[in-house]
Amino acid sequence: MVIKNLKTKALLWIWASWLVMLISGCGDSSQPVPPPTMAQASNIFESGGQSGATPFIRFVQFQGTSFDKLASAHFVITPKPGSASKPVDVRYSLAALARRGYANPGSNSLTVPVFGLYAGYQNHLSIEFQFTDESKQALEFDIATPAYADPNAVYDRPTILKKRLAGSDLGFDFFAMKSAYGTPVVVDSDGEIRWMGAEITNSLSSTFLNNGFIVGTPGSTQFSRLEFDGSIQKEALAASNYTNFHHNLDPGKYYLLGNMDAVSSGVANVESIAIEFDSAGRTLKEWDFAALLSDYMLSQGDDPTSFIRPGIDWFHMNSATYDPRDDSLIVSSRENFVIKVDYSSGRLIWVLGDPSKYWYTFASLRAKAVRLPPGALYPFGQHATSITSDGLLMLFNDGAPSFNQPIGAPVGESRNYSAVSAYDIDPVSLTAQEVWRFDYGQTVLSQICSSAYEAANKSLLVNYAFVNGGTLARLVGLNASRQVVFDFQYPNTGCSTSWNAIPIPLGSMRFE
Image 1 (spheres, rainbow, N blue to C red):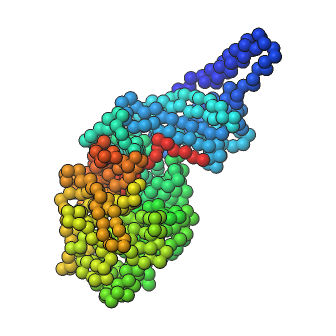
Image 2 (tube, one colour):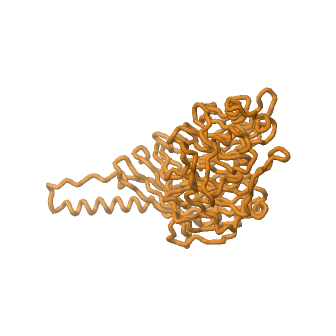
Image 3 (cartoon, rainbow, N blue to C red):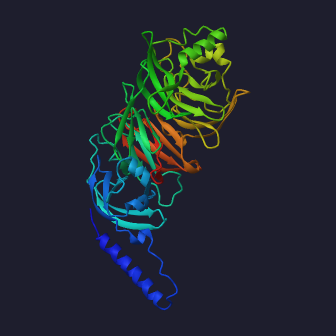
């Protein structure tokens, strides 16, 4: 770390300011000399630092006697020359630093966790301290970080199929790949790794929430909150019948929606239960789709026993979306359809799926089917449901048929390319329009996993998680016109590199 004798510079600047005020006041003794601002009187200086859990994190230490007057600390990391991504830009209130033990009342020292650093690089950092009188003190210094070599030979060696151009319009600059190799990996729109944590060995079931990651542990009911400073807080679901987090975590009505396996009366419910849980692990709401659909089908005179098959992956839930417009839950069942139910009662509202699949042979389910006009793409093997800023249902339309239907049952159609589809659905008439789609010229097929999410200004992050038989993953950024801004390719095994990927606001993160 390079220290530029900032304390001496600050004192010289204060003395010069006082001298100017004294000279200007000599001509008119009736004009009082204004006192210095808190920033002018500050003696805060950078005094060193400690490395974090990975090269992308550092704890920068400051000394001084002005911390009792401090309101916030705001750091910016200068992008590399030629970068098209915006700077990492993070602001901490003093209260936020104090809550994490980085600031203590009456102390002459302060620590600022800095994250988003380039590995193996001399990072230029600017930090601005704002005081309670709203005056500001700015410091600049460099942080040299060690190189990072990915032990899995994945994230440090992207193939840039299309580089983002400087000045190109895109509503996000950073995204996180949910990884089977460890914590989520944050990459910028130039393909540079900007963050990863430690300790967590698998983050496939994870999401970004309140400036941190929540990660469900595969094979257990434990989940962790992972902060950008590398710290981890672990919790567990309170209910004893759940056995496993699988697939995704998604924002819920109150906290988070989880896809769960469970055991009821000794029988496994495989990938057919969604729950909403809170930060302490308490279950707020459960939707058991085996029970919900069985009750509905029986009420309509159908026999559900050949459709709902306990102990078998007949449903294969992979995402859940809360829709606040009508207080409902939208769930992706890869084997069958996308289904919408009332949040409180579980009442079936509609199903949207390929009518050539097995589910459509049941009259009760067919009665709730949403119809699309000719030429529209039904969801085939879909993932990552979400609601766009203009109220459309968007999903990654993989193009795969069903994998776990009864022998001889129709498995539906398939395509030789994947798409992102956005639908406008009328729940009264049970009709819909595919308002738009992005299919990359029908050139990319990702049969399983994958995702697509909207960022600011209607930009999109598209994640092809299983390309070329699962040997490659593709991360593609689209602008509001759905034109390709960047296209990165990574080595992959199955869906391990990036089963799902989400935009991350590393360029405007605020801790209050």
